[in-house]
Length: 101
Image 1 (cartoon, rainbow, N blue to C red):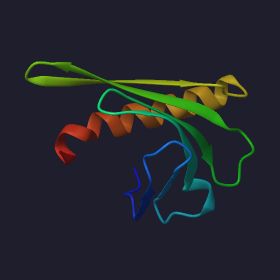
Image 2 (image 1 turned 90 degrees about the vertical axis):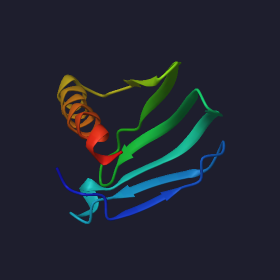
Image 3 (image 1 turned 90 degrees about the horizontal axis):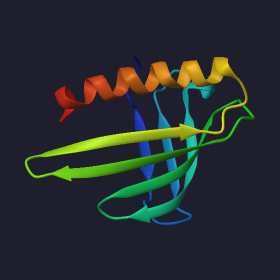
């Protein structure tokens, strides 16, 4: 898993989301926020650099007293390969989130 080397995020509707790992254009993520409902919901477009596919990510935060459950819904893939690749990426990144926090 490549570390994030640059992050640009303006979490307002229409704001930009850009994540880079420094591993080349195809590892860069670009998007725009579609919905920002603090503190429970984010929805944004998702496009990997160098690819035409644009999908939609929705992240929901569920406050369960002393823990927060993060639910990620990602839709709009062009094919099953893309869906599988993105699922593998989400699993890797979300599994590493507790250590990061």
